Structure formats: C-alpha cells, structure tokens
Length: 91
Image (tube, rainbow, N blue to C red; front, side, top):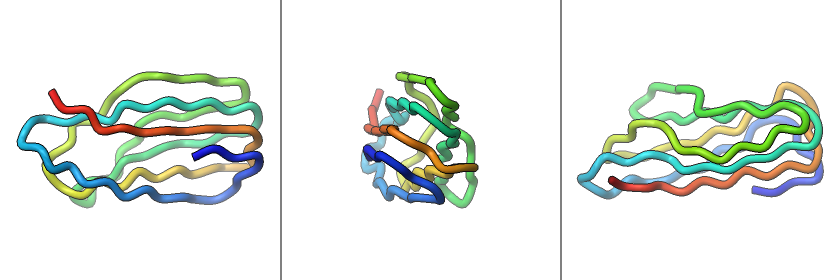
C-alpha cells in the first residue's frame, strides 16, 4: 500500500495455509503523520508496529496460527507520503 495522503483505516485479509509457524515480514515508511499497524487472528487484535513522521522500518513479527489474518492500518491524523508492505514467512 503506497499513498500520497491517507486518513482512517484500511484492512488487508491474508490466509496462513501452512502447518509451520508463520510471521509477518513488513516494511514501512512515512514522511508525515502517524499510523499504527495491527494484526488480528482469532479475534485477538495486537499491535505489529507504529510509524511517526520520518520513520522507516523493516522487520518481522507476530506468531500466527493456521487461520485468516487481518492486517489493520489505522491513522490518528492525516498521513502523507507513506508505504506499508507485508509478506507471510514460514519457518
């Protein structure tokens, strides 16, 4: 997800099909504003990471079961020039 301006909430739906333990690999950058990214699997919403003006991040996290996973991007204000990307990794 890349954006020039974004405010509000956007939800990605992923499916974890593997019997192996999975995590979310993510990258993010934000020029202006603040946002928080959560993941929800099994009805439990947990924070994955947050970005503030000028932040750049690249990491992995979360312990995901074999299930549907929702990634929720929420802003607390208008954000400008940002990008977030996600990939499921198994190991």
